[in-house]
Image 1 (tube, rainbow, N blue to C red):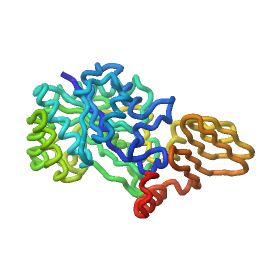
Image 2 (cartoon, rainbow, N blue to C red):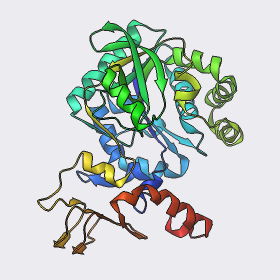
Image 3 (cartoon, one colour):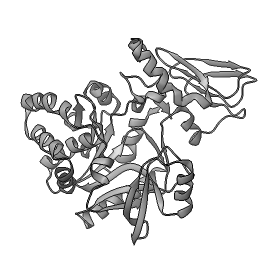
Image 4 (cartoon, helix red, strand yellow):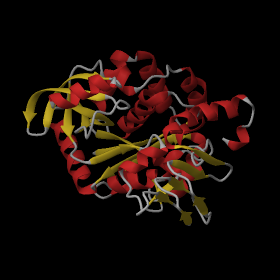
Length: 355
């Protein structure tokens, strides 16, 4: 059986004040009137039935996820009592899916990316499943051809070609300097690391047991339990797990990894300015997302709101204005990366009601 897991656990601090602890960025409705989680589900549900799609998220967000994706059976929603990074989210999901189908194949997908067009995404994903089933001992990842030398993404160094669009992975590279990123792009041997994967569920669990034995053992105990015992073990054991990404913990150490080319427009929505890569500005260069906007002599701004909020701008340029449910952000486009700093200050000052 082929199954998919959507990881919906990111905090999205740099997308404050629309991304909040009570409703993080994958639940914001800023594209086509839909949340990023909804778009992720629709990309998968075009070829995979909803009963084969699973979502792992913070336990506190389960009601919102259930409301957002009612097609997915409630038994397919997995709640984490606390965040322990992607290796444990994936490991928990793998153990649960293995219990349903020991010979199954699982894909792991993100809830906070923009990926277009859907038909090319689906073709690449189906090819990834095919490769994982043809070579059951491998872990499969998906690579995005770099559009430019980005310093905020990880990279995958490709080696021998297995077939057109499928390569052995030589090495994973973390976020490089600009000079190094330019070298990567110029070489033609590197993809952006998409953070999406496919493998035989048993194969991943074998690698997890080898490289993260403590997580493997504890997650296996949680998944094997039922009812109240599972919940008790989840609260008892999950917080003790090492917090580390699946890339560092497993992918970089695995016996064999191959990469499938995903020829799509792909964006990790990590900041408000990132939206300029996928949305078209108006004739004044203003990027408008959400509700009503009115401008006079205002150029090259980013204006974002939800619901029936009106944003009006006069005589300003290169400004970001985001109207959230509890706060409004105003900053220069060059300062959007400092939003995380501002949020940390609010938390330090005990102003958590705005977070």
